[in-house]
Image (cartoon, rainbow, N blue to C red; front, side, top):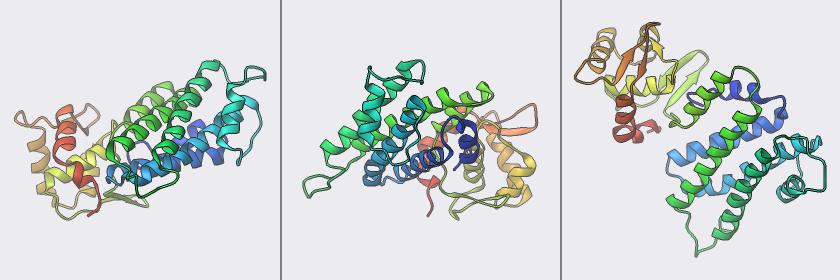
Length: 261
C-alpha cells in the first residue's frame, strides 16, 4: 500500500480494534481502492459488502465487549441500534453514524444487484464511486475514533488515504521500483514523490529509486522545481515533495500511468 503504510495503520488502531479484524478491514479497503483505480467497477461493488461486514463486527466488538469474527452484518447492526442494551462505545453517535452508512452501502448493493448479479444489471462507475466514497468516509472515521498515538499523525494518515494509490510501484525489501517502462524522468519522479506523501524523498532516495542516470535525475529535479513548473519543492529538511501543481499534473495527466502496464 502506498503513502500511509498498512502495517502502521493496523498497529495504530489495534488495540482497541481486534488485530484480526483490523487486518481484514485494511485488506478489504486496499483491495477496493486498487480495483477502483483500475476501473474494475464490479469488484468494488462486491468487496463493499465484505468491508461492511468486517467493520460491523469491529463496531459490535467495541460496543458490546464481545468478540465474534463470524457474527452476521445484520445482527451486529441490530445490537448497535438497540436502545435497550448496554453500549460501551461513546459517544454513541459515532457508532450510530457509521452503522447508518454501512446499512446504506449494504442495502444499496443488494437492491442494485451486486449480491446477485443478473443479465439485467451491469455495475458502473457511478455506483462504484458512491460505494468507494462511503467506504473512504468510514475508514477515516475508524482512524479518527480508534487511533492510538500522535493525533497529528492520524490527520496526516487520513489526508494520505484520500490520495491515489500507486499500483505501479513495487516494494521489494527496502527497495522501491516503478514498474513501468514508458515514463520519462519527470513523470517517474512525480509518481515517486506522490508515493512518498507528505514526508517526501531525499535526493539520495530519488536517485536510488528512479531508473535514470544521476544527471537525468538532477535535470528533472531542477526542471520540476523551476519557476516555470513549480511542481515539486525542496523542504528545509532537504527532502523533495509534490506541490499542489505537481498533484494536479498527476491527476490530470498521469492517473493512467499509476497502473501496471
